[in-house]
Length: 115
Length: 111
Image 1 (tube, helix red, strand yellow):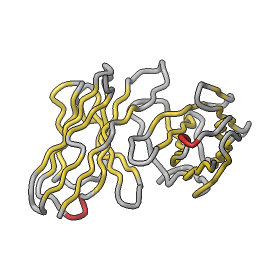
Image 2 (spheres, rainbow over the protein chains, first blue to last red):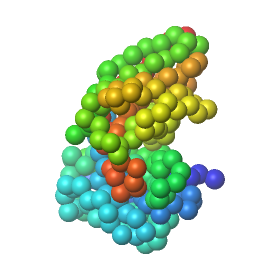
Image 3 (cartoon, chains in turn yellow, brown):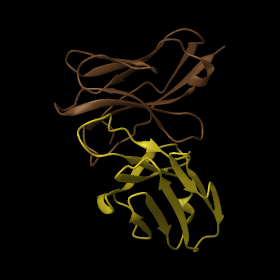
């Protein structure tokens, strides 16, 4: 009964390839996020979707394209992978509104290694 | 940039209270103080949040100064499983508001 799941857990690929990371949440939340944690362990938000609409889009290369087919899924597609894309990518979800803790629930992460 | 400053690292003896400080002198009136932690290689985990009153839940207590410029997270009886990086974050109470993580405090619990 995992709340936020990501696949794959590990991804090793060559420079120039295109890859996707999938995220699913079964919490009934309406908002989902992608974060990147680099080798220096800094966690930075990349995107956020609310009810399948993009609401946060940080300065991220346009090689990164999030796609939200429904409220429970937010996938991340990366074109033309570069060495600097190597990082751990975390998906998260939360429920909007003024009640509750407004906390974000994070997935286990996907470790991407670009060779 | 993160609006908080925290010590880089701390340690605490198992069974004792761990007190983690955080400075947020530029906090706005509508911003809450949130604490998350990240245990090695896992996704961050919510701990507690507050606006101006002290808060307590099953994991920790949060003490916010009257001027709201600083706060302290208290783990009352630290265990080895509390070893993690602890992040203090200020953010508006909205799902559209970003969580901006700083460098956090690496807490080590010694047996």
